[in-house]
Length: 115
Image 1 (cartoon, helix red, strand yellow):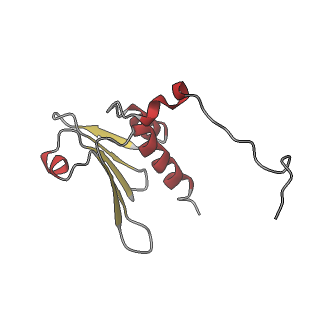
Image 2 (image 1 turned 135 degrees about the vertical axis):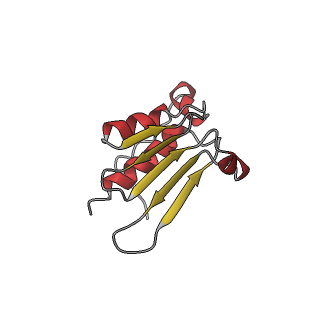
């Protein structure tokens, strides 16, 4: 199959400067700012962990930088979902996962939650 160059999508090559977020800076702000904007309940602990719950109570997000149990499993983000119908599931992200990637995952999850 031959395709004209005008029919092919343009190749986008972001510069290295545009990809600074690919290296985690261990900052939770992209996720916590998103959750705050969405109206989720946020609770900080004295240990610097943050727990968030969706308004409907079916999705939990934990930022667990000081949780010994999480560290033993090499994670800092935990997302737990309890669907209306179906089994609960968990997604965890490690220390080196950029928070922007976690925020993107949550944004996609929330965008599809109304379907």
